[in-house]
Image (cartoon, rainbow, N blue to C red; front, side, top):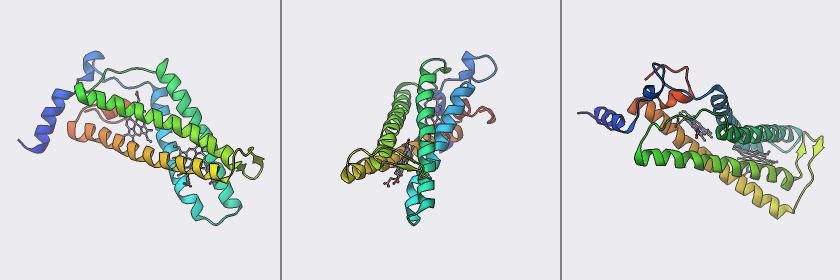
Amino acid sequence: MGFRGKIRLIGSGLSRDVTDTSGSQPEVYDRTTITLHWATAILVAIQFLIGRTTNLLQRGPLRVDIWSVHVLFGFAFASVVIFGMFWRATRGRRLPPINRGVLHVTAVAMHRLIDLLLVIMVALGIANVFAHGFPLFNILHFPKFGGDEFMRSVNAWHGLIANIIVVVALLHSAAALFHRHVIKDGVLRRMWPTLTER
Ligand code: HEM
Ligand code: HEM
């Protein structure tokens, strides 16, 4: 048996057919959960891109404007993350675990780790605004707390957590693609219902 065959065999042992619980259609997350998930993913990507490129520009009004977009998207990101957690804890659809045993524990641990990192990022982002006394579009000046040492330290932690989130999110995406293309189960489709069935 080839590699793919073996993996599929392991996959069939590990995975539960979600159609068992839902009739003929595989279960998918509700629209709000899905919208919030992809909004979070897109915002992380945009924020990281802005965060890692804007200081390549010369100092000046354009640079302040682009950082201001980062701060506005940052507040949007904060709302999406906080509302997302509230939604999942209250009305969001819960689906049966697809994996069993150690894979299930790993998946849950990874998801909670991502949640924790996102909340830390919201806190550090808002702290960064006040540590900078940020000049939003040079119009609205947030009050500045602490000196330059504090600002550098908050900014460094913000940048470090940004890098960690991106690495963990890439691993998370790789796991989702592994489910679809190697194990060949319906995990990715739960978050992306327009995909063809597996
Ligand atoms: C920065 C980007 C991303 C973040 C922060 C993120 C975050 C999360 C979190 C916290 C969960 C758990 C939800 C729950 O507990 O119910 C989740 C689930 C999921 N994510 Fe992501 N995600 C990101 C990107 C992606 C990408 C790019 C893909 C696909 C390639 C993906 C596919 C999935 C799938 C399929 C699930 C559902 C897993 C299941 O049903 O058990 N995610 N994501
Ligand atoms: C996933 C979300 C986020 C990512 C990936 C991200 C990424 C980054 C990165 C890489 C930097 C540059 C750090 C450095 O110079 O070492 C930065 C700076 C900054 N971020 Fe974020 N960030 C996010 C969310 C937020 C949020 C929620 C806020 C505030 C509401 C925020 C406010 C700021 C501010 C004020 C700066 C400093 C701008 C300056 O130097 O003038 N960020 N961010």
